[in-house]
Image 1 (spheres, rainbow, N blue to C red):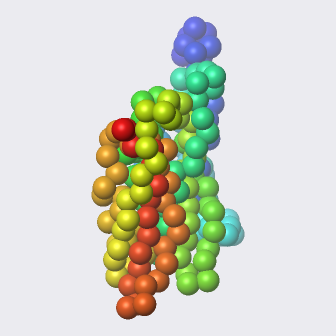
Image 2: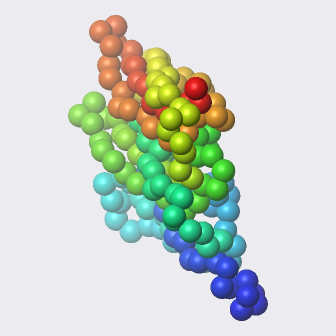
Length: 186
């Protein structure tokens, strides 16, 4: 790498979680493949599991950017497991992150009494003119938290921005409902 190219890059640590070390490693590899990076260090994982399963990290070089017109945002989702919640959050980030999304990493949010897990993918994303958008909700339903979340994720379109999934709740018939809130173009 030349000095000129080094001056245009910065280090970033991709972090993911998984119910096993293999799943944590796979998740961090997917995160890097989705958002890019060069000269990565490989991946480290293992040790005692943390609150949200095992943690895996890799450090890469990514293009430098200015945060002046960016917002740090969490694309959140719920799931039956750490693995499924994190995958749903990543899909929401993919669909609604918009151009220039960068510096993404996974975070655990909460584990509910019913066993559901909330995770988020937090990234820097480009600001929008909120006057050109409406706040819109996509509802989801299913026999499991995963299927309810995924049914809502399927409705998120490429024009949507700053989407985040709420927690899932049980319905009286023993199924699940959830929702995702987005800014969607007027």
